[in-house]
Image (cartoon, rainbow, N blue to C red):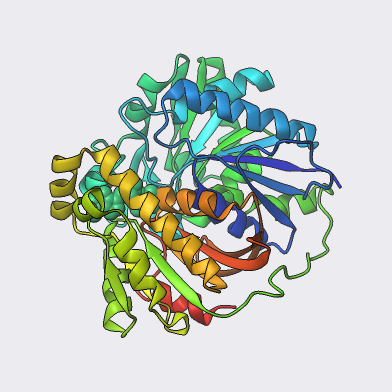
Length: 420
Ligand code: ADP
């Protein structure tokens, strides 16, 4: 088998989100954590490489993305997808544009699109402005994200300083006229030198029109929802067969632990709901971690009954996050929390936990790294964009649910336990 679409995601939960949506089609989807060392013996039709570069300096992010592209090309892919968050998370020196530009260069392609919209999760783009629910991005809770606070909602304005070539927009009235109108607008923009084109999309129908028009572009960029129509389009084009892949979740043991390092508004609500539901819980305080390390949390965890899905969380409201960051610095506070949650994951695995529910993109990266996981098989979806994934760790088969901050319903932690 050869890879049809090679995907590069800027963080772990973004990668699982994308892989989960692709797996809805029944096609086999393989997720690699980091760029694999050797060549791929048996590539899946959809190969997703998860990097951890969302907040990395642009030159570092570019180097890793190019290495991923080279591996995916060796796996046989001829079409590529650069996946970032549907809230366009990037720092002031953001690397979404620089990575896209480098990939275009390597592929010898002249133009790509930027379509972060994810209507099912309330992310929509209209006239270049990204909305989260009814709020422009910069007025949404993303304004106060611990690592990538978003203070502008206009995607063309966010992108322009990140790239060297021209930026354009295909607006909603055009997208609503369908794939031919989209293709025509992109050709016009190419003639005007726009290599980087932001795509308005308000509904799934808009994304389908964009995917239909752009399915043979060498490089697509966007949120995971843009990729959803691709398997069916590839089937219609005769590139992908219609067989469904076998379920990958056999042999996972009992016992669950919930590890939450996201401070998003939704995760705060999910943590509250899980505690209110009676789950045992332990709050990690970055200041206490700086003084005492993770020992007290590990002691608490060792005493827990894993059938009750104990919760360990650093999740806190924005004022508490700011207070910890003022004392420790944002990077140090984040690193302390990530290291503690990663240590808890390893301890829980060694105590026999089979299922791990992890909230937070960076947090998930730290946890999977600590568990020594390099390849995940994609299973059933718990919430839009969040599948159960299955892998080997410490000689056993385990299941991981890796959720980025704002994903899932308030009942997500219980929903994960109810999905198998
Ligand atoms: P999300 O998916 O919501 O963006 P991430 O895990 O990617 O979540 O990012 C959240 C970051 O905030 C992590 O680096 C995490 O360690 C850090 N963090 C978590 N809790 C706190 C806290 N109480 N104070 C400061 N930083 C925190």
